[in-house]
Image (tube, rainbow, N blue to C red; front, side):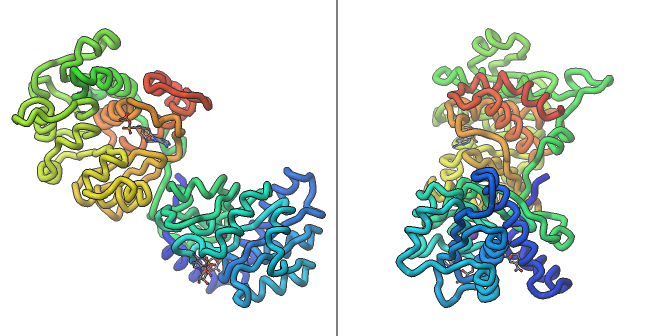
Length: 490
Ligand SMILES: NC(=O)C1=CN([C@@H]2O[C@H](COP(=O)(O)OP(=O)(O)OC[C@H]3O[C@@H](n4cnc5c(N)ncnc54)[C@H](O)[C@@H]3O)[C@@H](O)[C@H]2O)[C@@H](O)CC1
Ligand SMILES: Nc1ncnc2c1ncn2[C@@H]1O[C@H](COP(=O)(O)OP(=O)(O)O)[C@@H](O)[C@H]1O
Ligand SMILES: [K+]
């Protein structure tokens, strides 16, 4: 499991650890790790550290201190290191003294662009966990020049300008190729839009782990975690014991949604899939193993979980049709996943009143409608939005998009962030596959948070395997799910 902790928690842990160490020792650990990563990058780039041109962008805090001490280490190995102070007069004193002592120099006031243009590596020590509100105006052209210089840009702890706790980017932020972070991941390194600014993230151990609480703020499943959670049939299994998932999807207007949702459901580990809706013929033509039914879901036969919503179309306004199907499913006593059109048709009070688990799987637009806010607000503040939705609806919520997040209705339970996926997944119908897959895992007995995060993981992995840097169609995401499953279980 990869875990991330909030700034407040990191600061508390650092305080505890610092109290046991000689003054400045923690910063030296950070700087040593940072310098080692930079030396490795320079060796890859130039074959040597000696003679490399390194520029340090240094703000007013300890983030700048890390950059300066790391710069001093590189200077001692023969690199030519130049500091561009962004808060002259407030530069970390000890760090600056160490750098000058090691042969580094400070750029003249009109010099930064010339030194940046010639740099091999730029270290961004403008702000770390103490930064808020995007880069200040005077830092913006310098950060842009660093990006445009062709040098490798390495962010110290976090790319400056991003919000560490939420992944929000409220103004301009530096774009790094590599971020070297200390002690633990911060939520912003795992959540877009900040995540995109971080590049490849390297974690440096500074001995913080024993001082961090056992429950993180955020967690990301890895292969071994997913492998442990996947349902596996045993000698005693039969199709009913493995779980039956009911899929309520599709309409005369969107028959394909039914096929894609069933395709996902068949590959999610349930023993059987019951399809309910008007798309039975299309479903059977493609997947003859499906049990189909046209009446209300409650008359379709027993299921262990429902997935309702993809391609249902609009409400008829007379209480029949898709809104009746959604209400019927929500009245059941088994776990229910609601997606897509189902999210527009659900009754919030009914969801809140359910005793069996409910899983809502909106994309940003649907989440915005459920919250009554504008879509960009959800996209820029995904973590806040997913937590708020889970609390308001008393449901587990999977928020789809460039970073998929899963929140539990209990705010003390860490939000999960999905580490797999590819922007090629932004293609029509891929969400339908995810609905069926998540519903199937629910029917197989996984708790809602696990079902959602395992489904997102497999779905994203399958898409990566299928896309291999070329356009993807949703059918291929479903087709590759067994490959993703095998890849996870090794
Ligand atoms: N506490 C410690 O012992 C350790 C701290 N570490 C480093 O220290 C960093 C935290 O240091 P600080 O708490 O001093 O905070 P930062 O250095 O992250 O930033 C705080 C400073 O930046 C200014 N600032 C805030 N927002 C800004 C913005 N948008 N643009 C420009 N300036 C802005 C503030 O006025 C303040 O002076 C960590 O990110 C990490 O790099 C590491 O050395 C590990 C050990
Ligand atoms: N930029 C992106 N990067 C990675 N994954 C994305 C991106 N945009 C969308 N996705 C993923 O693609 C899927 C799209 O689902 P959804 O929005 O419901 O589409 P549809 O309704 O067409 O099926 C989700 O799994 C989502 O997380
Ligand atoms: K930084």
